[in-house]
Image (cartoon, rainbow, N blue to C red; front, side, top):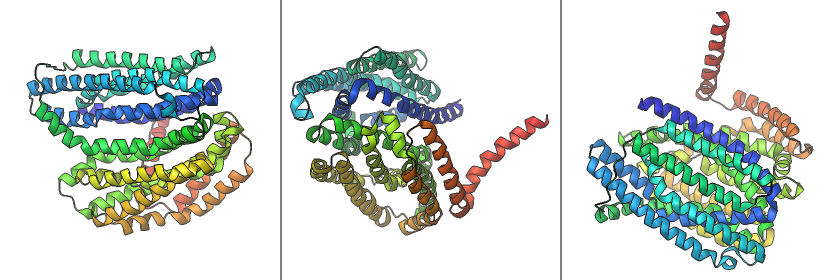
Length: 512
């Protein structure tokens, strides 16, 4: 039963990711066209503030999973009930604090969101901040039930609820936008969905999973122990949020909501881009931890690191070069006008920023398995601070493009150069071998790169059909050259295996 749940959960994770991406691609231009650049920009200025408030959880979610799993293995139901009650109390208190902070900040909108916003935009941002703060505050205690479903490995139920949430939001909101509702309706709808899914999870935990809860004992010593465990997790989450949201806030302060909107379009495309890399590395997390726990050699870890890095590089370069080829007409069509022309170079810069760190995501899991994540956390903290300092003058001079340039410069110095030194000297991964294997793929991508640049220059139509046709042509060129001159036998076998099973099954059915 557990194995089936895990397989179903893994499959539905990919389905959910694809569904979320497609829906967002369809939903975003509708939001922009009906809200307008100003209101859509304001909406996206509030989101990073909420993200910062959510950091109050301090990474305790990972501690809950760790300690509850320990009690579950020991069949210690009393401690499980104590931990559930303890976390529900803790998260309820944190949720109340979050709501209070959100309402407090909402009275200083002109200071938080900058002087470039009009009085009407500031008032809207303050209103949205209050609604979203209530949503985030309620989500804190409700997240305990979602975590309990995860611990009990009932992934099928969890992913179905997640997919329904992904589908229901735009299905309800699009008609509301069409009849004249605005961004506050979006925030209220998100709040309603949070409450409904929370009640569903709560009911499932109590009725199906028999989740034990005891509010009589609060273990402060255990809380201190968990806070020590989660400190670097918390710091890493803080750094990640700051690094990827600071550009939006800087643009709001320095340039106004119009440039926030064009930047958000590019940033959203980069989020989709990164998901392609993590889709591969996430499924390998348990394997990495098992290898380290069994004292696997650094050579074997390096071999896995390099093998996955090549696969990620092949996939991400296909998307990156494909975007260069047809990204400009797609962004203009998707965003809803020529004003989003600037989103194209911003998206290219952000994707280039993501590319090299993304092909090394397995290295992050190796660090965690070896309990060596402290250096990365503090390095990324320095990168985030440097990004903010460099991006200010760049944003003042070049707007969204300048903000993206500041991000790529600091990311390359910290996340690539310094991090690769750490991988080699401390984590003991074979980085010369890694980069030699990555470099061996580059000759096979010369012709696809030339094709992408030619398409970028000559393809001017902004119809989705044109984008689709030329995108397919590029992918055929890329696949042919990378298959013939780049991929090794192992990588080709990953393609041949499923193809043979599909066509073998078809021939078998046809012969009957």
